[in-house]
Length: 594
Image 1 (cartoon, rainbow, N blue to C red):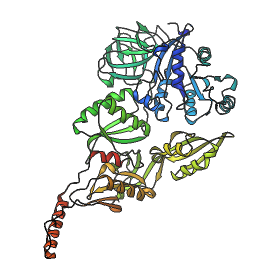
Image 2 (spheres, rainbow, N blue to C red):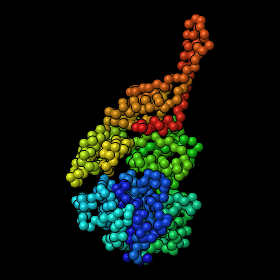
Image 3 (cartoon, rainbow, N blue to C red):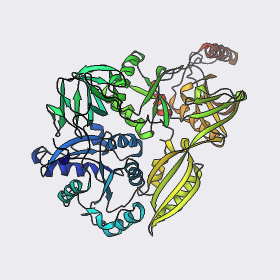
Image 4 (tube, rainbow, N blue to C red):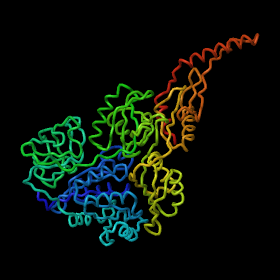
């Protein structure tokens, strides 16, 4: 295929600005999908994506347009899936930046635009949803020009829903985005930018060929793992997988080489030919840094190995997950997993349960702290159970985020109050236009990850948008709150919080557990403690057998004797009794804000 007739581009935008709808119209207008086969969110392959109305995985497809081949990647919009976007951009020469003509620039619009600029990609800006009554394309075109520096007259106006302006957009992609570069006679260099596991065919990898050619039947070398495999099938998604004889420079397609070991075809791997290998691998990707950690435990202990295998296969499809084995006194054996955010954590847990038929318990989310001990040693702690005793700690540093909130001006006061409640410090407040404000705060990550996004949407009636990036570590006055059941620590409920919020957390957790834990044959004290100091307590009262039922009258001493005997039995039972906590109690208790 002639390089001059290829265009590789990605669609980027804030969540819900119409990326998937635009992909649908492109598939329809180019004839890649017949009208009778068309459905909404055509490229979103997961039921989860359709139910939530969001894109979770970047999807790629090749479509024809006026004697050219356009290779398009539809990317997620939520901040938690920014790593998917950054990997997709490595396979492109340009991006289509979509902005809602009724809402204007949002936080993730800026973040994705800066990602594209860092990668030196050509940007084609588009105002979408011009058919809406609330659309004001002239105003938002000026806003884009002011904030991003893209001339207003170069910004295209389309409706992805009706298809208006989409053919002109495809013409602009061919005109403005440069053709890929590459040498067909050089040794093969192909970058794996995504993979998934197929039970029957092994690992199916998405590849972008940079130099050389990849032919069906040839023997390949995976440069980082040093593994060799023979090509069983190569092809392009159009959008159905279509086998081809070879892929040349600038082309994007899929590779099947019968790989069963999921570790051999990770994202960022460079593929070359075994007979004539390239001298050096491609740059690949930086490993993402997990922000939120939680424990995932199978409800049935026999599923531990299934969970390990499922995480291996899911990591192939979502390289931003990290995991390592851990054990809990209350929950048994499981894995400590790292995620890019709370939505990412929810999605991964749900995918494990749906795609691999597992029943899981997730512990309370936490972040990674830097603990400086009195002997000068520095520890990284993401599990509250690993925090050393107080007398060995010199200081604890927690991660801070630079949070950017873009909101209509009437919600500014309410959102500033929310940020101050979460220990935020105002860095900058800037008016993007007379009606819209960009607020930037420095805020502890632990305050952002739990329910900050929900509160933000609630207080702004859904109009505010959020983006965040790591801004380093700072010392804070943090303590570990332990929950004791019958004087024994329940490590699944331990958490690290700021000292000012410890009493509130302890009270709420004790109150919640008192409602959830079934009554036993003896009183069960539920206590919240910091070190050796109890800060809150509730009691689950014992079930009582009516030992006086057989006493119809007579002397009170007879009744007292029976009650004393029962009391002694309860005391003995309590000293050797073990509290039975059903699995669903952990799930319910860890949703403190319900």
